[in-house]
Amino acid sequence: MSRGQQARLVLVLGSLIAIGPLTIDMYLPALPAITADLETTSAAVQLTLTGTLAGLALGQLLIGPLSDAVGRRLPLLAGIALHILASLLCVVAPTVQVVGVLRILQGLGVAATSVVATAVVRDLFSGAAFARLFSRLMLVMGAAPILAPTLGSGLLRWSDWRGVFVALAVFGLLLVVVAAVGLRETLPPERRRHGGVAAVGRDYRALLRDRTFVGLVLVTGLAMAALFAYVAGSSFVFQERYGLDEQQFGLAFGAGAVGLITATQLNVRLLRRYTPQRILVTALTVGTAAGLVLVGFAATGVGGLPAVLAALWVVLAAAGLAMPNAPALALSRHGEAAGTAAALLGAVQFGVGALAAPLVGVLGTGSVAMAAVVAGGMAVALVVLLTVVRPARLAAVEPAAVAVAVH
Image (cartoon, rainbow, N blue to C red):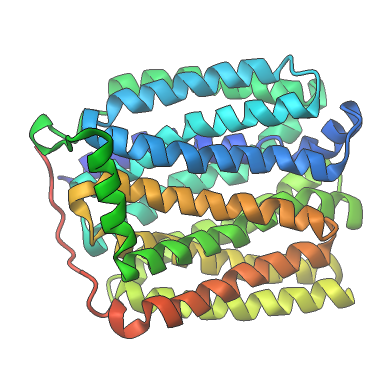
């Protein structure tokens, strides 16, 4: 596969995956407005974010095995169609409970874009080559979290929060065209999995019996939990604690995403000198230390908002190094069932994230609550890496830098 072909693949898959971060993040500046408009509580509104993450987790468990059986394109198109429908219904939702249910359906729909895109990369690449391409993919993906709150803030200048869901429906329609025209089938019929529910059960059992795979999946999920704790709490912390308006919040949120993106691109260079496992251990160690510093800043108020943003930037950069490498190491072990493996990986990522988001609300939606969950996610990820996966075991994980194109 030439560099030009790889660049086109990254652009197509990146645009597809972008709908996930846009769906999660674009309405964040409107959370306080939704709370007031629907006459509910901040904790109830944060549960709508949890619903999206839960839908993403459940959807991937269903769509992953389906994509291994029928190919990648059909589940992808069906998932985008569901997302469009749910987005349009959110526009007329009368209560926060209805919004929560529809957000679950949105999550189910965008799960198809996430799991299929990851499976497509694994269809074509393995080992460090997977990690390098996935890092490039995260550059495109990373633009969505930066742009999403800013786009949401811009929409709120001339529309209310319901206009955000109109924009998501329009983006979904564009993605149907992108998927139909720009993505070929990467799983030929002879490589598809057959055997129905029993075969799916066997695949999941085989994955869950692989201690190293399970540990790496948990590490990825816990790093994602730290990220989603920031996503869930940032709008309330930045706007209510530090007094930022909706547009300023978009800029502050984007600054954190810049750290994440910068790290994913640095990861490409680091992989030329270091193994994925070494980068992963270092990233989680630094991320845990920065998370503890973040808790100190949030609890004492020392340094104010700039200190909190600086510590968050380091944590998000550490997550940006961890998140391409942990999945690459995990999926390199199970190329024969890439869709199912990617589904389990994605389900744990968003499932743990779904638990982290309301935990911030339960603890009070303040800066200390957000900081504590962020730091906890990184710290527990490091503990799992050292005790379940173990660095010595990581040395045996396939580090091959061979790209395998499927024609």
